[in-house]
Length: 137
Ligand SMILES: [Zn+2]
Ligand SMILES: [Zn+2]
Ligand SMILES: [Zn+2]
Image (cartoon, rainbow, N blue to C red; front, side):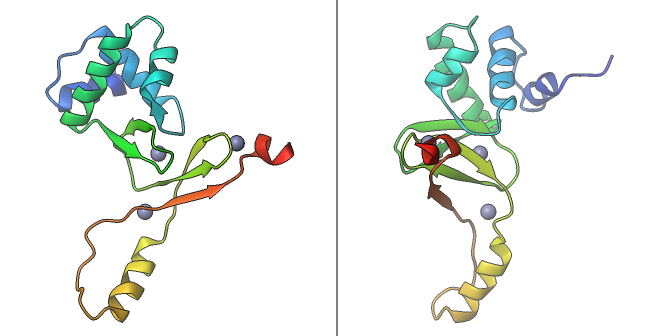
């Protein structure tokens, strides 16, 4: 039988496979946006709140998930995947992922014009706007 992605992710980070960990992993994997701990508690109905919080911290320590600190202030979690960024609705704080930030282009432009820097080691970017339902009202 082929190993599921959530089993593989846990095993590769040396974590024991437990039902709550699988449920929390799936909750994170199922969406295309970072979730707050409360949203995960909601979607992982069979797991109690304290376990969800503990599991999220464990995932962050193990490098499976990361905390996303958006300007709205609520800490959100997502799986530690590829380079991507977030669109945030300024009215309802809905968040969505987007890919393709062309960071290489911006970095080389920045370095070419910089007097003091020769390396870029990381970047962050957040776009703000109105989601579809907020722009209708
Ligand atoms: Zn909105
Ligand atoms: Zn994201
Ligand atoms: Zn990027």
